[in-house]
Structure formats: C-alpha cells, structure tokens
Length: 131
Image (tube, helix red, strand yellow):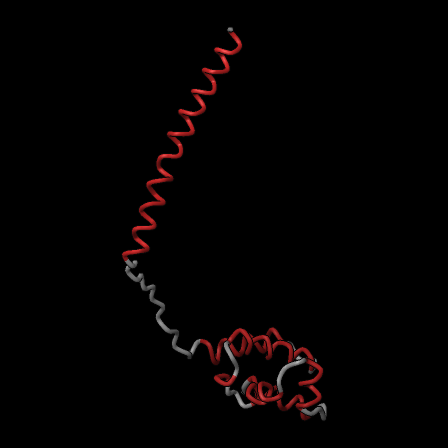
C-alpha cells in the first residue's frame, strides 16, 4: 500500500497539477507540500499542521482528506515516541516570599474589619433612628 505522501503525489500528477498551483490555492508553503509528498514530516512545524496540510491537500485533489489523516496517524504518529512531560516547580526567591506573605496577612484581616465596620454602622443607624 502506498504512503499518504505517495497517494497525494500520484493524484496530483494524474490531475496534471503543479505544487506551485496547489500551494497558491491552499495558501500552504510549497516546501511543506513537498515534505508531505516525501513523507518527511519533521520539516513541518508540528503534527497538527501536518494533519491540516494532509486533509486540505487531499480534499483539494478530490480525495478523502479525513481518511488520509487517519492513515497518517496510523503510520506516523503511532510509531513516533512521545516525549515525557515533566512539571518543574522552581523555589521562590526570598523577595517574592516576603511580598506574598504580606499579601496573605492583609487579606486575612479584611473580612474581620469589614464585619466590625458593618456592625458599628448598624448600631449607629439604630441609635439615630431611636433618638
């Protein structure tokens, strides 16, 4: 069975279209289309772009773009090792810790002050009404 790139290239040649013509019509760089036809996906900046290029290129030629993307996933993505992603937490600088602790302290007192102020205003309002 032919690869995705070979299928696209064979259909393009059968329709007597040039890469320049397709590049202009799809607004995809010609070197990316050449990379797709040569199955050199490392040239393309990411698999999301590669899948989009394959889908659009296939649809433009009258092929099933979604099926070509599925074939790409099965033949390329499954064989490509995925990098391990690690989250690194860096220690905070002393200055950042001091600023953060001051903010926390201030935020912790605001609810108490608001409640006290509300009670005082409420009592003053009652006194004003009664007098």
